[in-house]
Length: 115
Image (cartoon, rainbow, N blue to C red; front, top):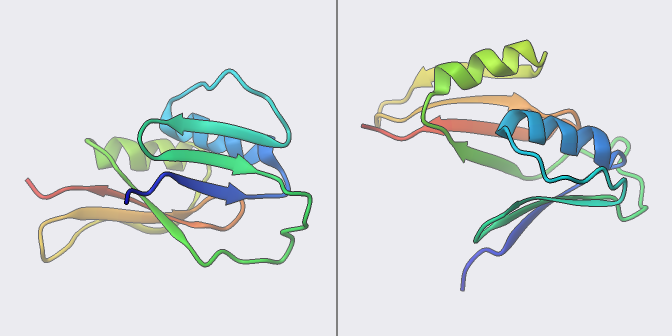
């Protein structure tokens, strides 16, 4: 069994999808206000509005993206005015990671694997 998809439910698909398109440096060619597939590799990342309000609902999930250059990613997030939770920090096991909140308040981690 493999993880097939991670879907972020939101009240504003375009806003959240545009944030991830900018962060991930991708263009899915879509401006659909209901559903957008952002990554379609083995594990898909989607943004979806199922017409049930998410206002006031806090996520119970976090996502982690692996990056090659965490310092460049951190600078990009600062330029995007993202809400930084923790700046890049080397962990005792060698990984460097940071965390921030996306526009819907989901906790997102960026990590660079130990060398």
